[in-house]
Image (cartoon, helix red, strand yellow):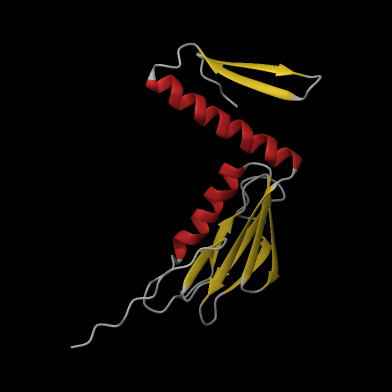
Length: 156
């Protein structure tokens, strides 16, 4: 994790605590980066100790997901791919990044697990981008407990 030069990090091994401080708390950029650094550090600690999870729901007729291995497309040895059937004429394949574990407990549910929240949620966003939830029929890829308010059809 890269820490800006004006943010000091002190750790107390006896109490298992980390203290963050900045050179000048009145400068807005330093104050902003203080909070951002704290959030990143907190996410790293939570990721290492408990891990992060995200659940994707596929809502729509015929929407399915499987995890497969494709040797000819792999970016690194042993890479797996998430194969999605989302109503296109072809299955969509997304490469699973390192550090992310993907399981499909049901054909319409995808469970993502990993230590780095940023990598995990960016992968969830890439999957969601193929079929974002649409407001008229309520179909699409939903991340975690996401809901949408359905709109009425236009009447002539």
